[in-house]
Amino acid sequence: MSSMDSKVSAIYDSIVKRNPGEVEFHQAVREVLDQLDVVLERHPEYLDQKVIERIAEPERMITFRVPWMDDKNQIQVNRGFRVQYSSVLGPYKGGLRFHPTVYSGIIKFLGFEQIFKNALTGQGIGGGKGGSDFDPKGKSDNEVMRFCQSFMTELYRHINDFTDVPAGDIGVGAREIGYMFGQYKRIVNRYEAGVLTGKGLAYGGSLVRTEATGYGLVYFTDEVLRKNLGTSFEGKKCIVSGSGNVAIYAIEKIQELGGKVIACSDSNGYIHDETGINLDTLKRIKEVERKRLTSYVEEHKSAKYIAGGNIWEIPCDVALPSATQNEINLESAEILIKNGCKVVTEGANMPTTPDAVHAFIEANVIYAPGKASNAGGVATSALEMQQNASRDRWTFDYADQKLKSIMLNIHDQCYNTAAEYNVIGNYLKGANIAGFCIVADTMIPMGLI
Ligand code: NDP
Image (cartoon, rainbow, N blue to C red; front, side, top):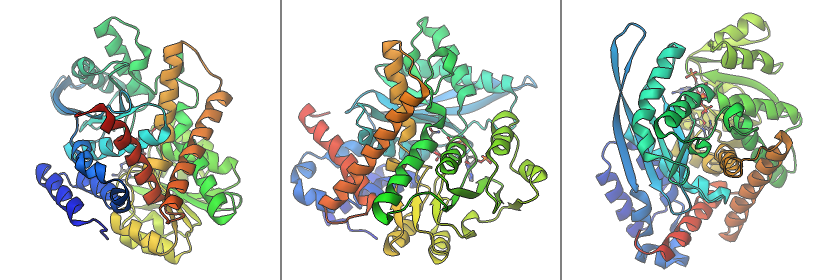
């Protein structure tokens, strides 16, 4: 799979050695380095200036204790993280993930990807990420509040609207952001709305932020369909994995554009409904009632629930993995290819394993990496910061138009960069090269940072 030359290979080996056991981080670094051979031939200064080595080392990695009291008055202890990866382009920006699988390797992979994703948005935001191994599932609202308050009691000293601006990710939505913003405001005694994004509309949130990652993914994918296949979502059968924030709003926009989403999933299984997923039911179950997907089939007899199955076995035209990392492996990729899937665009971060990505590209399935296709969330977070700084509030349509134009611009950067390097339609190469060059070209004139 590798097209690394020996110098880059040696750099990669040293990164692996310096970050033992952090396999997701190694994977994310490798994805970028694998695409850089042609760039380093044109830009030897990147090697001379040790740009890769510098970017791969976070500016700062913070780890902290998060003690909190559960509803039975028992003390619980979790671990909190914030990686402040790169501030070359602006304040660190990236979400917080609360999930039991969180450890340094997950946070660093997400933070590393975020640097290039944020570069592609063109909005002057650096890369960061954070989270905790806390599991919000099955916790009461009060438990979640006490956890969030304790988490922020430590994190607050490392963030502010010019330094580092966290947002949500898996397990962190408007409820968690609200509790964290309340605690931040209380500690610093300043109404610094721009310190967190994904806030409620009543206290500085932006319209469209909730929808942004899913809508942005679909705007990007629509352009991929037009540009490469001369078609659109109209009449396409789609699979969107996950049933969280990204998945729900991707489904909404696909349906608006005339596509049919026939399956979605959670971590226990998936639902398959050939008549198309009913979005009102899905939203109520997941956003209001916070229930599992099994409830969906109780209301819709056309749907089947398959516990623990593989959602990618269902034939589709477009696959939009939007749950979590490494959810499409080689075996699933081969099934998708055999069943005639034409386009795979990532809503989640790194949902496709490297051998599966390779299989898609070899089979001429158009594949777009999350750092390009899911950038709509962070892009709209930057729009939220812009509104906070100017104490302005934009209409839904205005913010949505901005999001759409940013996504089309990201698409074109990837497409044109791939064309410039003679690999038309290769969004993997286009996204990684375009993102990397923006960071490298900004970093070098700043001296030894
Ligand atoms: P949510 O917490 O809202 O939803 C996550 C969804 O993925 C849930 O349906 C969850 O199921 C499922 N899921 C989580 N972990 C696993 C797992 N290990 N196996 C199978 N399914 C799993 O998160 P988001 O929708 O916000 O995030 C989804 C993905 O999109 C992540 O990769 C995230 O990094 C990425 N992303 C999110 C952005 C945002 O703005 N929110 C921006 C850019 C990327 P269950 O309920 O069973 O856990």
